[in-house]
Image (cartoon, rainbow, N blue to C red; front, side, top):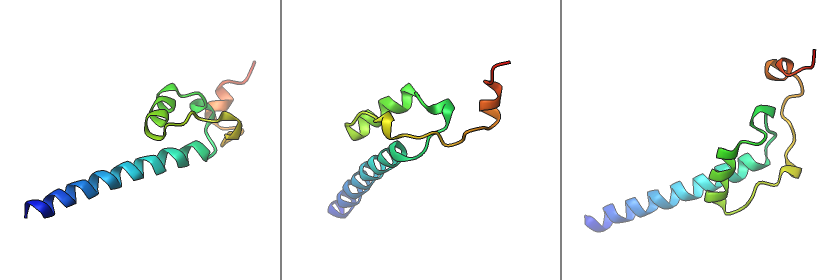
Length: 75
């Protein structure tokens, strides 16, 4: 019984690690909202989990004009 529980726990940890890496790698390649463009906390987490820096040359803005962007328009 201990062996089955140990295997279950090891499998769960492995799935969580793989899922976390997949999430951060996927997020690094998707379009990004302007307010999150240089999110230091996301960059630190992504570097920790994937071991890679974010390549901002591959990222594109998600929305050209929305409520956030319209508040930043010059007068």
